[in-house]
Length: 496
Image 1 (cartoon, rainbow, N blue to C red):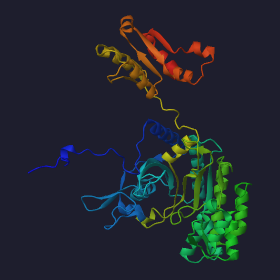
Image 2: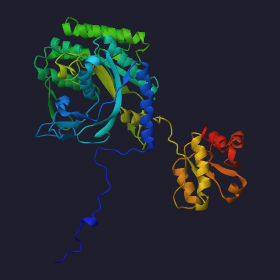
Image 3: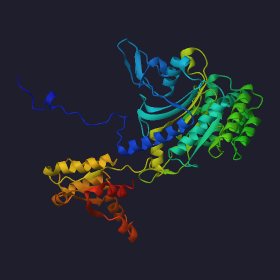
Image 4: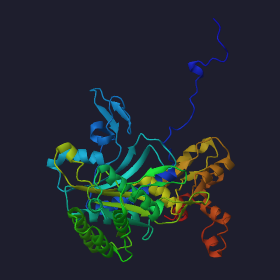
């Protein structure tokens, strides 16, 4: 028997090093940014009295509602597997469905209302694309068990403060508020009868930012022909009804939330559901005013449409206002960076009883990317450790004695453990963004000294920032000092 020399045996197999599509590798810069955002936002949530909760990565698939896999489509929308008892489990699609399950499972023992926040990865078995991943981190805050509009107001106020704490100063983002009951009242007044027609109207309204008033007018009527020649069938509303819908979505006022409510009232007044939505928004406005949330931080926007089959009352969306650019200097539009609203039917899937709930969620990775694109690195620049240069294997105990002293003082530090010489070690320290290197040659060891090279000073010198003579004198680029002064000298370099 002969073997073709081109045959590949199992021993010869080499897998291609590649990441699965939609799953991103994250280095220190990304992880530091996400951690900084989560710590800042968590502090706000806890100050509002919300309890941290972490649920497992897997939920039974029937708890995920419309994302329930079946025997023919076991991974439709989710990543699912079958347990040894033949039940389907799926990686959580979001953080809200696990909350609904947890609340229903533990309702008798929970404080009511139950106020919780959560963050962690979620997974979606969807086609990945630019900025669209199959795994990403969300951060949610929800109140379960309160039907008061003031519960919505607290979520909105908390979202405003949370985004500011995460690195978006006032004026960099805004919360837009609407109410599904207003929309439903409008649809009734406009004569939209069937579920399909109502959905078509809402979808047309949702395109206002992209298509403008004229484009939405066409979609509310017979339909619209786009630039490619494709025709989108419209909602089929007639003249006065079209004008009524457009008057509603343009009812936002620069005069603030109260003025906008007056404008909306003139369009939907007389509809029982619309009046109910107006009253809820009025109470949200009053609570926000009492909480110190101004009109430029959160305003009422009747054109906001979210979760057509999900939200039951107030809805809100966080929009980024900062100018953002990519690494090539091209303008980037992030738009929505989070959203939420009232969902009073989710827990009822488990209990059969309506349980009011409201919440807000934002994508942590998306927010980190938006901040970076705006020139606001979340968490600051990721710093590397102080690097102790390794000159001689025989002196390793001395190097580890020094690195141990730095670590004991709370200073990140490492001994270079490669096999390269002095110059590559310095390049290594620079690539790690190390603030300094520590050098112990034979002379320093014999004299009980260390030599410290300030890499930050070198970087600033390279940028032409060392014209100030006093700064130069105060911060020498390299110094040899007694070993017992090491910690103080390094702290001065790193600013700690």
